[in-house]
Length: 148
Image 1 (spheres, rainbow, N blue to C red):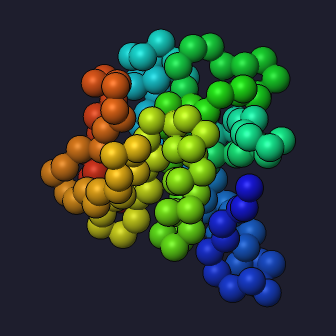
Image 2: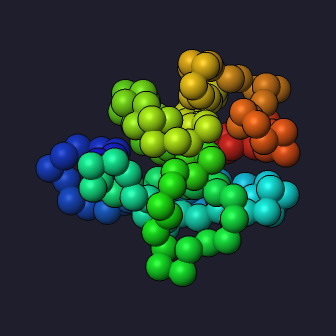
């Protein structure tokens, strides 16, 4: 699975800063999702590894999954929700991979809006609108909760 970097490819300091920024952002999003993970009897993580088809291993920036966290940090099925970080251009392909693996929804939050990917398709969500997960009514977050 690819890691998405912000900044120029040749600037190791820029990549390090981008990586740190991405980790802080992932942690902030995870904290927002913790009550929702608890509501479905699950958990939220920024460190999961997920066994995907063909021996691939995915590492979602933020994942919300039902059940107990695996002791070894590796899920054998896709989490119900994956939140992606990084350039929007890489999002569609990554979202498709997570949906094919079995995730019910993939969210990407960017500058002033969010994208929600499900088996039914993709939708842009803006301030005042909700990001949701099909089949899990407990999970509904206003877009503006992620912005800022």
